Length: 457
Image (tube, rainbow, N blue to C red; front, side, top):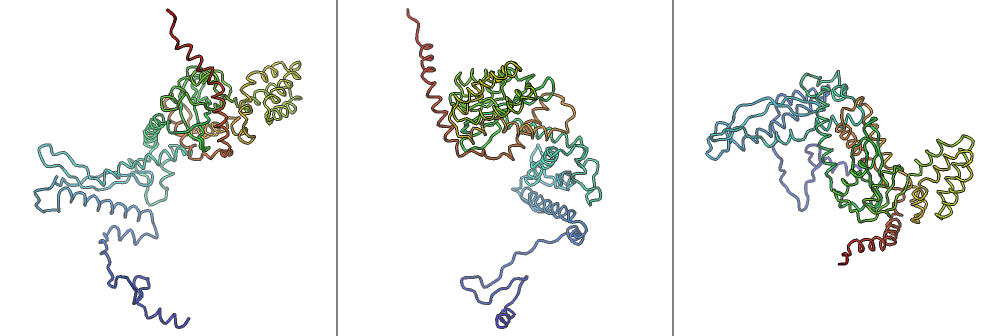
């Protein structure tokens, strides 16, 4: 150890790094870049870094930005007081500009350059254009509002009251400025979301459900599950209710954006007849539709007498856990028959939509996959995120506002989407859908042939 320490002590030390005296295949001459000169403002900020690191970052960033803009001005105009026949423009003094920093605006002095010629229009500095186009203020505002920070508290969320960068008039932290930025950015996100191409998604399952915003405004949303178990928000339309026109508008929107109506898929809905009708009208009358078992059980239990609630819950659970669809259907019919005298409404509710309650069982899916696809939990979770991010909205002005907030909530929910638990069993679903399509293909082909057959003369 003493010998090693002595050897280390003999080696030269530069900038806190040990440099060996002899090193094979290495440069023997040290080369160092000349450091940039430190301006007085930056030196003062560094001296006070212990008091305000934020001020140091701001000062250093502004100094770097101004240096880059000055380099842009040199590229366009040449060096100051130097003659050059090939320059594109000439200097035109300086001006105050604003750039986003920490959720608000800060003023930056930037050079102005005008083009040579008769028009003499002002030329944009590339560095300044890129800095302004980042739109960090809009992203700050949208991020804070999606985590339920109200517009009245935006300024306090981005600037500390006792901080070194106080809130000032015109710095972009007011509630109206934050609201305008959110509207602009959410409108862009909505347009991008509604125009997204869906043709590349290998969708096996599509879930559709409605979200009631007001008494006269309903949003109908769709979410898809691909062959790898990944979930994707698909579409969104507004309407007065979950009627046939609204459902058809959503389906038409999905088809226009690339969803192939000739491919057999599993549809999961909450039981609205208008949705079922629109799906069968567009994707075929034999399209497999699974009615949400959680919604169905809730509707049955709410109408059931209290003394029968436990027995009805147990009977429904046992029927839905059956692997044999005929046995499950028989158990549900027996349940309806037993309770018909005391609660005829409950019995009719059990019989209503009986075929669609057991679709996943008839497809022969494994129990874990049946549990995942027999309900609309995926889209319900997304709707929960929409309600959470928009809970500060006290009054909905119009449908456009609801669509913007809903699209922002759907994209926010997509960030936390998890893979379907039973994703390894999805190849079985693909095979079952192919078998289902093949089983009903002859009838459809025959009907098409009959329709295309010319009339006899």
